[in-house]
Amino acid sequence: MTNDDSQPQDACAAAASSGNDHLAPHAPELPRHLAVIMDGNGRWAANQGLPRIAGHRSGADTVDLVTTECARLGLEALTLYSFSSENWKRPAEEVDALMVLCQHHLESQRERMIENRIRFRRVGRREGLPESVLAASDACEEATRECDGMTLCLALNYGARAEITDAVRAIVKKVQAGEIDPESIDEDQIDDHLLTAGLPDPDLLLRT
Image (cartoon, rainbow, N blue to C red; front, side, top):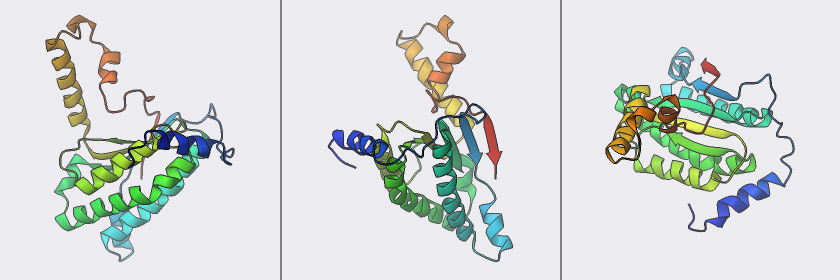
């Protein structure tokens, strides 16, 4: 992360003018927002006689390919549901390994995101995530905040009920402060307080 506010913008601007013409414009027949529930990596590894973390590493490599291809095709957004709030129930050893893998992956892919003009966004509660993972994701968000290509949303410590709960709490606080008229609350108001505010709704959901 850098204190030079101009650096992310300069990096993304440079990427935009340095041979990224291969990035295709949005095609009407493609989804605007693809969401992927990342599942089955551990079972795949077990079937191969490998430790579960080996499956997660293989899945991370596949994510790189999918992300790059989605950006090339011109999708507006790609959401990867990688670690839900329910996943904390997994064995501590596996969770720790997943967090380390996530940190290293974010650090290693930051420059590729800039090169492909991908804007990174982490969605999910910060509470409970290791500081190392938060630092890596914050650095990616800062470095890519001016990128104008696809938005990559990485769902970490994410739960749909938690997201709705947090949105309702935020709206209630604004009502109490007199910033929102309760009678004006509609679907758009709620959408504005969700973690994916500003993005099109997912129109294709895949579970691996």
